[in-house]
Image 1: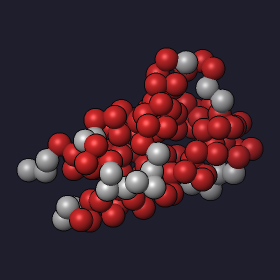
Image 2: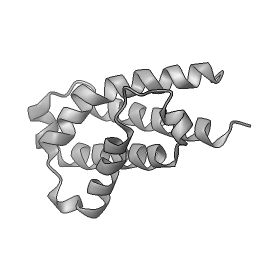
Image 3: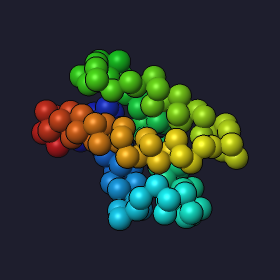
Image 4: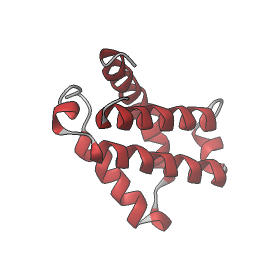
Length: 114
């Protein structure tokens, strides 16, 4: 049975996979025009932030290149200000910040034998 941090890392990896599936073939204009994909993507960013919040500091320190407090803050922003989410910012996160997070999480899981 995996430890709690491994389970949370798997949760992050799964959420990234969902976002990649939702946005495959999209550019920013198509993303912004698709309310359902915007909402689903924001929901899974919330999931990522919640899982990141639950990771131990030791596990977070395995990927110091990831701004973990910012990931958690995004979760809080989405959860508490859903109607005012800037979907252009969400797209920028998907396009520019998810790939390094995915790489880090995959590395962390591999080091755990996952």
